[in-house]
Image (cartoon, rainbow, N blue to C red; front, side, top):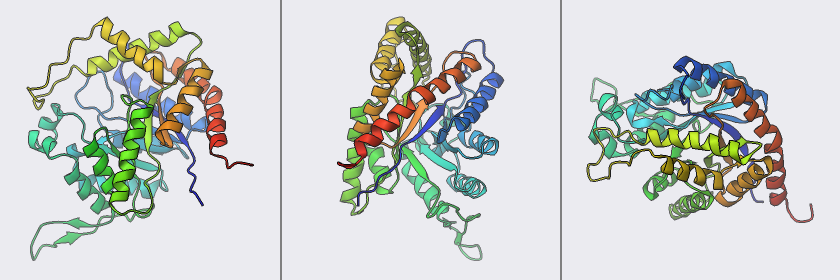
Length: 357
């Protein structure tokens, strides 16, 4: 019998600070959105992490996740992502196990390497840590989640230790890998971990990455494919094209501004990002508007069904924040959940139903 996995819908909260907002405003908005998401019946809340960026309020996805887990009762909360090379992997595993045990399995750890910015000089081990990649800390994290810690010490010191507490989720709490290149896809597949795929990939590109993951999994002799891959989309129900365009231009301007950051580890051979111009803003906004579930409700349904059906992913992270006051964001979230998601579920379930049923 073919295994059928339910679609999970959630919100991705990036704690972006727009003009006129304080960091406190943003964090209060984040808590309100998370709690409203649970009240509306969503499955997941995902949190990003950025360091030394004044226009982003959250430098620790894990700390904020722990807080939100304490303010909610049912929804799963995940990091998208914890920049693992900047954190001691064994300590990250201990915190993951603790949250997993305290919440009855509601915590999800997403990990990635991030960009070679100044945070690697301040928090990590510099250029060498970034160039070493995600594999070394990921392997140490996974071993610690299984309770295994090799100390590298000799007698009379213990050569190995056991992490505590024991996991609630067997064999270990869920771990996702942020991936966008063949090397990162293969890393996740080799360790039997699902993918986190982000905004820059359209549905067809996501499908190619999932297919690469599946091929690599089979090549490694695994009988069962890894399931539950997640992807991010911008999500917004709007009553007019003009409204949708304005919101996504604001979003595009914010994204391009973040892309201007070049830390001391940046490869000097790479071109310096061009300045943020209105032409670049409009081009990026147009790409978002052409593929993401942004616009009238029926357009949102079609786009989201397309992403799910084509990509093969079953966990959806909807980015719902914008340069608006909190009540407006909450209103948009409720409209998306009530006007779009029920129709998406019906369409997806109908396409999966066996013939004759």
